[in-house]
Amino acid sequence: MNVIVSNRYETSLKTLNIDVIKTVAGEFEARQLVSMFQNFFFQRMILDITAIVNYKDIQNIQTLSISLDMDKVILLLDDSIEVNSPTYISQLISIGIYNFAKNLEEVQYLLEHPNTYRDVAHLHRLNENNLQVNQGTNLNSKKEVNLQVNSPKIIGIKNVTKQAGATTLTYMLVKQLQKKHSVLALEINKRDFMYFNEKSMVSISDSDLKNILNQNINKDVILLDLNESNQAISLCNDVIYLIEPSIIKLHKMMFINPNILKKLENKKIVLNQSLLTEKDVKDFESESNLNVFFNLPPIDERKNDFPILEQLIFKLGL
Image 1 (cartoon, helix red, strand yellow):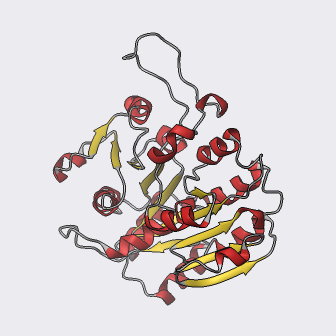
Image 2 (tube, one colour; image 1 turned 45 degrees about the horizontal axis):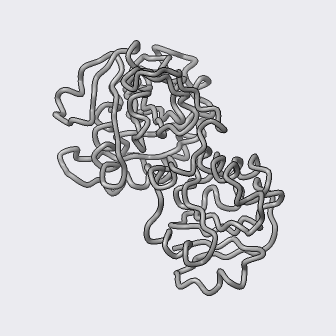
């Protein structure tokens, strides 16, 4: 189901031939919209840019892009010179907003054919968005790219309890994400990926990581099986921390590192291979003082489709 947030174009947007689960009209601070929709499930949001207070300041749009999944948002632009300028459009692209429209026809098209970066790359003025590329005359020379601009979404996966399943979960996420995205998975400082016989899963060393990332800026998603790499964590947009919540694994974790729970505060905790009920999860949160990001039951990795992972993928903003 879809969401419509409107202001100046409220009447026009009502004519869209789509199923709507929620409609709000008026002017809202960016943080208000985040509060309204950050945990609200929707397939697409049609967002009238004039519904955002001070929308000509790109930082207000960036506030939305940080907290909402902008792949699911179609931004309806107004007719102002500022918003339609090449600089403003390029800034939208730099913060990951690829679906923007100037009229209802374009909105309707994007509902059925959402853009990827490739569709809007010709509008991206890299020299105005601090993309740092070493200058040189040799077209085959290596280029250093600032990974904060026009880079894939990099998701790290790290075991907290020993052998909590990061490598196998990475494999299953690759298979599920490949249905809609271009994906690369990198395993840092180990060689377990070789057993999956999957071409898009590569084992590398810490020292090769930045070069590999620079060579794959065309990917939509890069998954990192982090192992013990601290350098890799610093390059991630998001990291999920896996805990297998069996009694023996939890007790071993606490015995090895009594302060581990304190270090995990405000992290994205995924209970992996978990048989806990909803009540059990609440008890775990209360006892550990942690917030569980996702409760993932055991999955048969031999299958080709993992519907439960779609929910995790959605929560990760993918």
